[in-house]
Length: 208
Image (cartoon, rainbow, N blue to C red; front, side, top):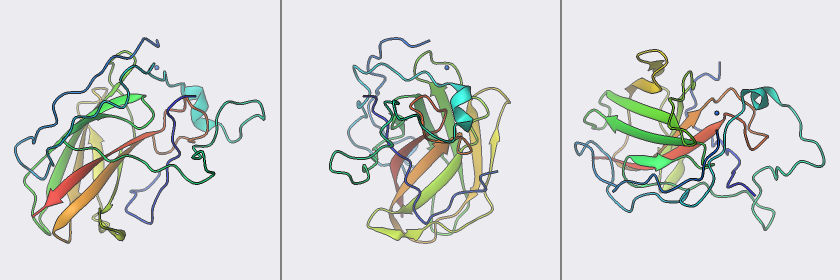
């Protein structure tokens, strides 16, 4: 079974909701702080090590139901509950489903200051840019998931077009503490089939 997980959208900021498989070796790099701007140092991500990356299929974006014989399990945990999505340290990780490799940097962060996020997304299978990924942000305090980031009218732009590099701004955090920032890719795609373009990855982020 693929390491697919269901995308659980908490009551949070989600901005308007408006592919050559190869054996996967570790794409992890040491988890370091990029410029010290809120990124939390810690163990590098290796959850896709030894896994075969999922090659996404654009045709799966608009699937609305699953055949009874499908291997897709809807992301349910073995006990029938919802699978908990991982949160990573550093600023580099593979997405939850081993479809994409993502990294980010930010401008300096402070409470109620305007922050810019720069996100790079590539296909894990062949390292090509994940273009037109419709990147949106979900963020909340790690110790209080009901405290979500305010809606700041954030806009995400792929620049240059077709590069898989995204600039997300403005972003403002309204409280000091450790936050979770989860980037969602191809948010408008149904997250039903394993090879859907939809994906997500989360990191810890400190606001002084």
